[in-house]
Image (tube, rainbow, N blue to C red; front, side, top):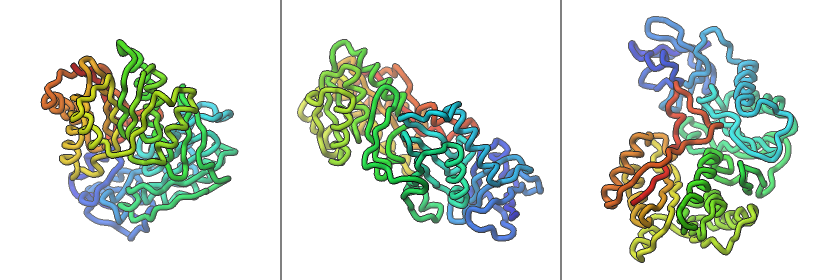
Length: 399
């Protein structure tokens, strides 16, 4: 087995069981491992710290599979990790039904770069790191054994693959092609999901609990609310708002294809399409037009895409989050509800709340956080890997 040796004093994060080794921490590499191969990590004093996947093209040069120096990285290792992750979400695999959810969440489940989601009779995989790519066929075969009868589809088309020196790849791995839109149940709601082309693996599974919270909070408004749903995509929060009793929803989305699916999702849930106005366009421009027109809403939902893709983008992303939340606060009636999110990994919860505080100050509004919002429980946060807590949100009362 090839070995990487760390610079003196650079083993502290590994002793805290953080699974990443950055290129700047490495003093030397022995035996020239191939991309994705397993390497032994050694401290500068010779101690073995664990075994990891080698990624020569990435700033993260090694991602740890195990901190046990005696544990072999082989098919049985992946069987154990997959089985543990699956059973944590679903103790019985006998009846998968028509629901959806995350089965494997990468580093948080001890499988760096591996994402596995389920959508009714389909499993969708992403292999986002060199190590995940190296073991791709083994992992797919094990999924087929552990979840018999499902079709497996690959969505390894995230931007992060480029940082690993990997080309994007999508398509059927096992079984049949998915339909253009697959109907799934997600808690109390039903949705149509595009596995092949939709965002992420087809849907925002991480927002399940927050959709339920939005329906509850909108239902608690003193009167049937006029709701603005920004970045509405395929309408999951629009559905939640209507189900919560909103009298009217304005849904803003830039993609006409997503808007058409959103219309179908509203109808799928037996809700009244005549209570929704879909607006195709830029959210920032729409918010400014509403401000200039003096429009007022009882609730505003902000679920924007990731603004900060790297640490270097944090400052600009902070300005974007402040701008959009400031505009939303100005549009709310006194006592109105702001449900706002950031999915940027590099924007922590504390920073996000500071951004909201500055937005409230500049908007001249008194704002209270009435509920903190987080990613769904099938996206667990590993205490040794705080980066796994990427989705943060707040439900705010704005006076």
